[in-house]
Image (cartoon, rainbow, N blue to C red; front, top):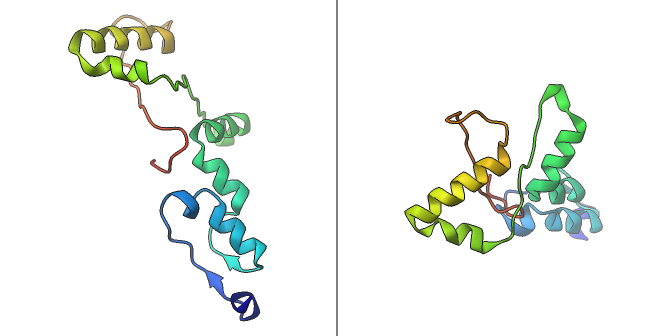
Length: 120
């Protein structure tokens, strides 16, 4: 109440979790306190990489394209990378699934990240 009464502004500089996923922003807004950065809905959206990619793809801003080629929650797929033979087989499987029309030897890359974490 005091922060709202004095027209304070919360400078949000908290990394991860409540500082990035919209919870802190929602608490500020519920208390009538101004804050820096986006609102709770945008913050929550940006913490979900799959949802963010879908929104960007739908918007097609300035011709930019974003895509999430594959989402998996199977720890077994990642655990399969623990041996060289298994890693090569898993990589070949991922390549054929993600780039079915790529010419043999064409450059391909993959980035594995958690979908709901603040890591960029």
